[in-house]
Amino acid sequence: MLLREILRIKGKLLIATTPDAMLSDGVGVMSEKDIGSLVVMQQGRLVGMLTFREVLQAVHENKGSIQGVRVDAVMVKNPMTIGPGVEVDELRSVMLTHHIRYMPVMEGDELIGVLSFHDVARAVLEEQAFENRMLKGYIKDSPT
Image (cartoon, rainbow, N blue to C red; front, side, top):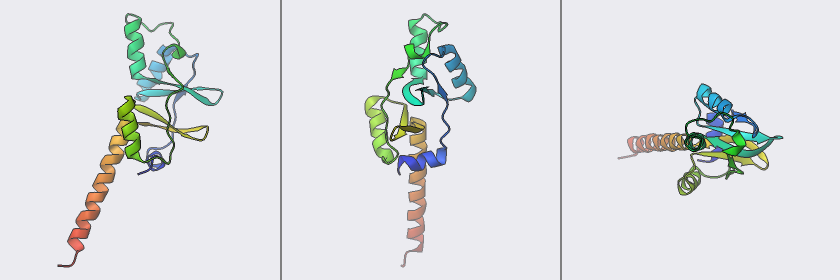
């Protein structure tokens, strides 16, 4: 299954922030939207990713407070990206190898979506279920 197929099912809604935004505002958006990451955009370009991992690190480093901390101080700058024509198994491998939970999907210079490890797991599960149904149908309809 190609990543573009997963994005077509998931949808391409992107929730973003800017590098100069306050981290507390980003945490508020992530909490309200029940999401684990924000893309960080500047002048229409992806410049970073903010995930709950960076938020937790900031909380720890600042002894429990993130007041006055900007997004650009903790975001992953110039995050690894992947193209929409990549197979889901390759993305899963990249995510596991690099310990990445959220991967921006780029088509040329345009950010077209973000896939989470959860999205990958769901896609693989759905693909396996489809293959199982097809195989069971084939076995049921096969000549004796």
